[in-house]
Length: 394
Ligand SMILES: Cc1cc2nc3c(=O)[nH]c(=O)nc-3n(C[C@H](O)[C@H](O)[C@H](O)COP(=O)(O)O)c2cc1C
Image (tube, rainbow, N blue to C red; front, top):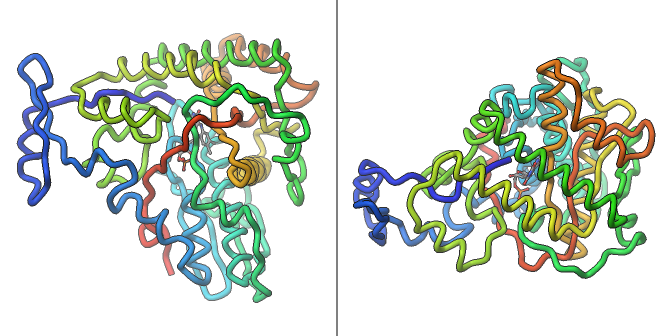
């Protein structure tokens, strides 16, 4: 995943900024004769309608409230690849086929893992609202658009701290402290109940952690050196507040884990290109993400290409992230290595990233997705979301 740091300044954008009725604007010298106009509200992370779903999810009752929880799930590049059909006693969950990462996710594994993340929030959302969900994965087979059917049966409402964490869980891309997480704390993050065939392998020991960190940096560099992957990732970057509020999806500057001062400056600065953003991401991967990772988790299975396995992997990933959130532990998804494994497979090239990752995993454990954990130095900020009304039909 790569993001540019400085959105491009254009005369058209400047003029459009002046046209924003009633907005408070700053006109900032951008060097080389350019100007950037900034609606001051845009400097406040989490403002505006793009973030409303984080504010209202818990107050919505019934099946639609469960969907309001589902749309807050982690998902690749914030593509939000889901559609819901909500009846009185059923919720159907489908894939929105146009919302995908192209060459970054050629086998659509990440897309289905993201749908699994949404299923986990949906299940928690149902139980908290007095609806026991009976989940059937892939009721129409592995290639159908409908990925799950949920039959709802009235039941006493259940309180689960992981449900409470739905609205505060965010991907944390900032630095983590050097305070350790012991084996028991890591094991306590993972609850595979009801999710056969998937598990989390922890990479903690210093040498293995350094090897995986190096592999992540090499993979990030390989992603940005691959123009197709770089472009397909960049298509989901929302470089200014107009784009965030319009699309309500994608990757943002606010979510990059920067400190408040640096973030403010970066939002005011002019112009950077896709390549500038790529360089920023590789640098963050080397100097922050891998340099401060306390441990890595890899969700593995014997059958990573199986669609049901991918959905279950997403549920386990989201459950782990929610549990981490209840304990104040930060988590960042990091999937450049598996993205390069896929790219080498698509191109029919001799695998290089696959064997390096396999050497760090138990025999037969094949990777689906990876992440890092640690005690965060600062809180993560929310990412935009499309509202329930845009993704659910009743
Ligand atoms: C399958 C999957 C793959 C992801 N890959 C990455 C990644 O490689 N790097 C990263 O920083 N975030 C990654 N993410 C995190 C998403 O970008 C994030 O969930 C999304 O932008 C929404 O933000 P939120 O999790 O803070 O709500 C991934 C998430 C999922 C579910």
